[in-house]
Amino acid sequence: MDEEKCQKDVQTIKYWIEKIGREFGALERYFRPERKANALPIPPPKSNLRLYCLRVSNEIVILGNGGVKSSKLVQNSPDALPLFELMNLVAFILKMKNENDQISFQGKEIQSDLSFYTNQ
Image 1 (cartoon, rainbow, N blue to C red):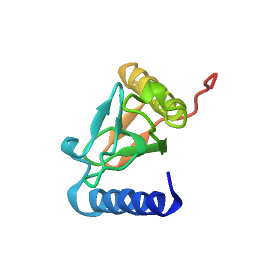
Image 2 (cartoon, helix red, strand yellow):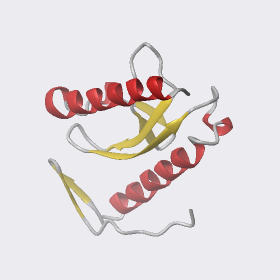
Image 3 (cartoon, rainbow, N blue to C red):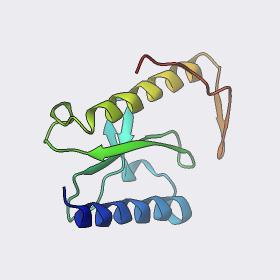
Image 4 (cartoon, one colour):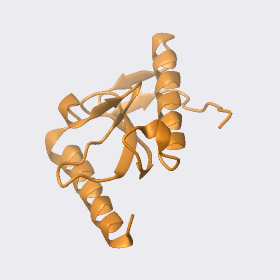
């Protein structure tokens, strides 16, 4: 991916994060499911950059990391796959903590010890 295209895609992602954060809220329709996590879809023109995140509520989004999705399937994208897997692991852990009353989400706040360990 050339650097100029990458910079434009980063600026587009930044623009949408700011719009969601300041104007729209983290409504479900602005996020694409990615197993247990989410991705921030970038409107046309299509981007090969992906930003993985976890939409918790209309007020809370946990941003993960992103990378270049070089294939139609994330499983065939060496840059994006580890980031995709990590965000899905974080989503799984937070869901388990929530189900076990070890975490709570109140408005724009997450109340819990958010530390955990992974093998990645």
